[in-house]
Image 1 (cartoon, one colour):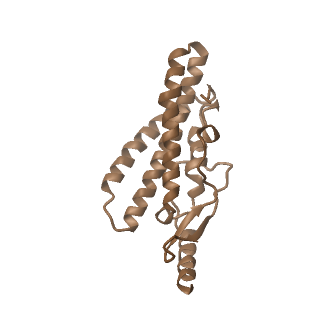
Image 2 (cartoon, rainbow, N blue to C red; image 1 turned 135 degrees about the vertical axis):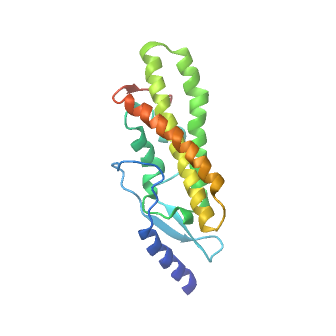
Image 3 (tube, rainbow, N blue to C red; image 1 turned 60 degrees about the vertical axis):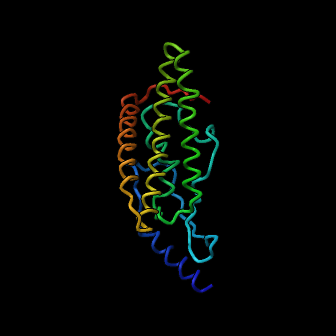
Length: 195
C-alpha cells in the first residue's frame, strides 16, 4: 500500500510539471480538468484519467453548427484542453481508444453525411454545409493528432521507437493546419451541422 501511495504521489507531482501541447490552440472558455491518478488494474502502476474528457456520441460533440472561424478552439476544447497539465504517457489506455472512436464518428459524418448532403444541396445551403464539413475536418484531425500524441508519449516512455508515429503525426498536422486555415478564411460564414 505504501508503494502505491508513493507512486501516486510521484505521478501527481510529475503531472503538475509536465504539459502537453499537441496542436496550436488558444485558450477556450472551458477550463482544463485536472487529471486524477488511479491505481491501474495491475495494482502496481498508476494511470491518469481526465475528468474533462468522456466518450460521447457524435451529435453530442460535433462542432459544425454556428459560424466558421473558431473551429480549432472548439475542437481543442474537446480533445486537447482537458489534457493541458497531464503527462500523456500515463493516461489510461481507454482514453485514446475513446478518442479514436470519436474521430471515426466524425470521419463517418464527413463521408456518409456531409458529402451526400453537399452534393444534393445548392446555393447558400451547399455553402453552409461545406463550411460545416471543414469544421468537422478540424474536429476529426484534432482528435487524430491527439491520439497520435498519446501514442508517441507512451512509446517514448516505454523506450520504444516512435519515428513512424511522429511521421504520421506530421502528415496529419499538415492536413489539420490546412483545414484550420480554410475555416479561418471563412470566419463569420454560416456553418451548418449535419445532425
